[in-house]
Amino acid sequence: MIQFSNSLNINKNIQNVFDFLGRLENFSTWNYAVESISRAHSSEGVVGSRYILKRNQGMQGLEEITVEEFIPLSKLSFVARGNYFSYKMMYELTPKGGDVTLLTNKAELTPLGASNMIFNIMQNKIKSEVKGNLLVLKDTLESNRELFMV
Image 1 (tube, rainbow, N blue to C red):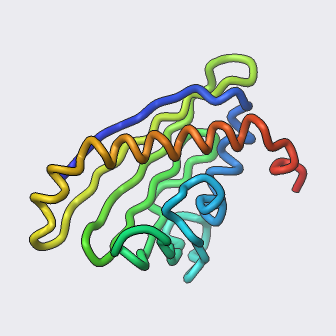
Image 2: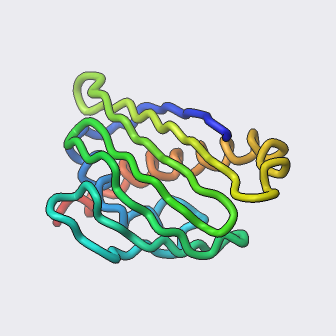
């Protein structure tokens, strides 16, 4: 298993950050490897809802995502399973005063089958790519005011 975390401050209030992040369909706007996410099954409430994530990079292809935690203004986590690895992503939000939100992303990736050695070699690159996506999320939230008009 590979575990890592990334943190960054976003100059946007916690409500706007959580509202945007909590709509998993938005992931394709800030994660370069995600082509689309669509809801496959709704449960009562958000926890337990399932989504299908389609990647446009690598061999993973399709992933099934299940929301595990959805605590407004605080935490979102989900598990995903694909062809070569499964993972858990957690996003924790902390207000830092004014319109600043600390976003902490924690990731746990578990390779399936013989891909364990490849994962160990790629660990730093994976963490760096995730951090890059979070920087795109930060830029998207800080610069795109129309996202919050809905």
